[in-house]
Amino acid sequence: MTETVKQQHMADLIRQAVVIPVLTIERLEDAVPLAKALVAGGVRTLEVTLRTAVAAEAAKAVIAEVPEAIVGIGTILNGDDLARAEALGAKFGISPGATPELLKAAASSRLPFAPGIATASELMQALAYGFDVVKFFPAEQAGGIKALRALAGPFPNVRVCPTGGIGEANAATWLAEPNVLAVGGSWLCPAADIRAGNWAGITAMCAQAMKSLKSA
Ligand code: 3PG
Image (cartoon, rainbow, N blue to C red):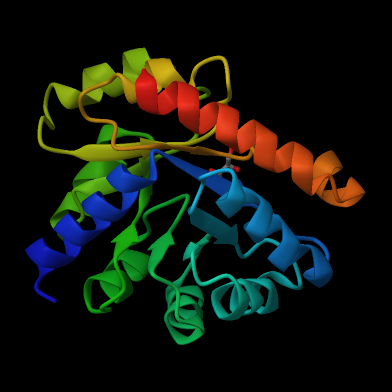
């Protein structure tokens, strides 16, 4: 894939998602039922974060057993994590940040990838390596929609997936921004519901969110 094709592919993946749940899976046995619950609610593009001991195994299980899910790996912090994501068969990778080491590895990898940025300098660094589709993180804490609009001045062609502090109350407002492709966050997969195995509750919440966000 050329750099431009890879970036377009990443943009398309994110745009068609509308919402990307950021999954932190503590127990391996939760992975497949959680993914099935999300998919049943119409949320198919999932970010499995590398934040727990079972994360890679969890992603592997979801990829093998929930073919309707489009599984990406999140919390990619370095080149090793990126290689791990590729080896797992992830469809895309996402990072909260944008170090030169990671950007260099991602630029030479075939995996569609979105680095994380919160400032103009971080965004310039990402752009220097060819990444114009980025995660804006932590979106609310880093200045919210006002900050995003300010960044769109000098960087009108950058497209973002904001995450951090996004939930039912503000997802539609973020999605209405012209440079926002999709929104991400953990609100559709609350830790308490995962712990309790409240899969039906997660499905209902996803279905409701997709309905209101798609019509917004
Ligand atoms: C992320 O990595 O995108 C965040 O952990 C998601 O933030 P949230 O929990 O505030 O949705």
